[in-house]
Image 1 (spheres, rainbow, N blue to C red):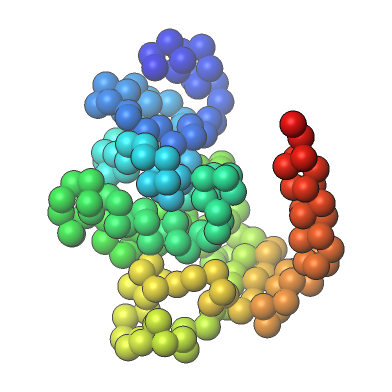
Image 2: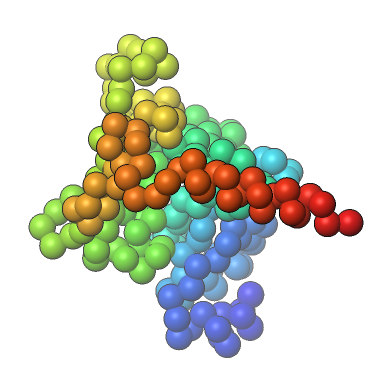
Length: 202
């Protein structure tokens, strides 16, 4: 790890994928460089990988961002599911239910993820000077009831299907659950054709 940092990471903002099995000595080294961790918790469960030490990364002031990883190891690519697994996996890893409380989980999903991508001064918060990125969500579903703690519901009850509208840099990308920028039916058709070709390869 020390060699990697000296020849690669010292000059660039780098994103490390997963960082499973990171040792305390690795964390100490990484804390000296402009690095972030792309954290994809569903992948670790599906592939029986070590759960990365998120608490330790953050105590060392290493930014952590949520990531989906690929469809082969994630399937749903639902970022809300990953937010939930982020919190649950760290509680289980440390055996402490108070680890990674709701405010911290939401912070990782928003501001800290933006910093991992080097965009901390552009996105991740609704404020003057930042891009107008926001979503409208539907909390009327049965799985959100009783809806007495909205932040907790965002972490532990949300699904991608609860997102009603998506706005990116002020542009409406999805309205009333209908994607406006691409033809979803056509995209699915193209994907199925590609998969069919791959499955026919001997």
